[in-house]
Length: 115
Image (cartoon, rainbow, N blue to C red):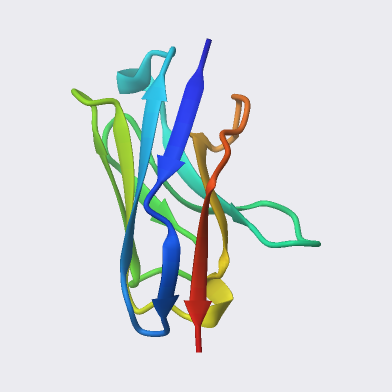
C-alpha cells in the first residue's frame, strides 16, 4: 500500500523560503517519477514540479527559478525548496507520482504566504 506523508508547510512572509518534505513508502520509489502538486479552494489541483527517476526536473512556469525539487532514493524522500515565496503560492501542497498522479493522496501540507 502506497503511503505519502507531506510536511514542512507553515506561515511565511512574502519573499521568504520553506522546504517541503515527502516521505514515500509502498512503491518502487527509485523507478518512479515524483511530483509536487498544490491546490487552493475552488481550484483544480495543479502540478508544480516533478523529478524523474533519472533526476530530470520540470517546473510550472509560475514557480520556475524559485522552486527546486529534489529526491533521495535511499531515504525514499522528495523535497521542494521554495524561495522568493509569493502570496499566490498559498495552497495545500501534496506529493504523488507523476505526472500523472497514480496513488491516493496524502493529507498534504499547508503553505500560507502573507503579503
